[in-house]
Length: 165
Image (cartoon, rainbow, N blue to C red; front, side, top):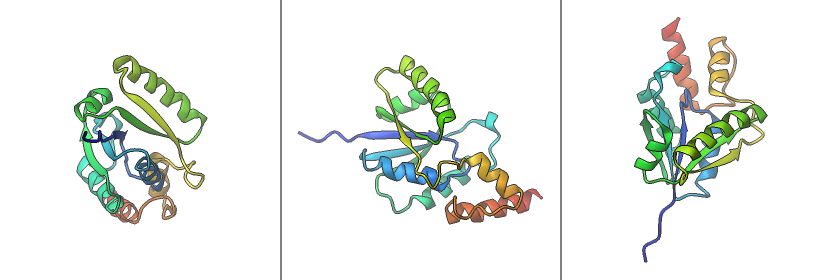
């Protein structure tokens, strides 16, 4: 009998991907055969980087991690999860505030798709305070973000911010 491969979807805007995001993906790979990093294409969030730029940074960051796929989607997450043949959604938690927000989404997703389970992974202690929006803000003000983002992101942020000035 062929083995059933387990697929998890790790959704987010990843604008940009941080070391915390990469850590969550790598830890999820210990639990699932494949992790789809799914970029939410949500123009209302007014991202700094395009979907294409974010995909490139994620690919470069996770290039050595077997079992990672990078994709993008619009619309409801549970519809995307079903299209991908996945049954699990991975979400990273940093603090209590994250839990409240994610708890609401997990329950709404359960109402829409009872067969889809949400798995919460706690961010490691080195990255619990890091968010993409904080990274962008610190970078815009000239702060050093080199310890919290992959090198490809650091270079891309510097280049993008130079163009915006």
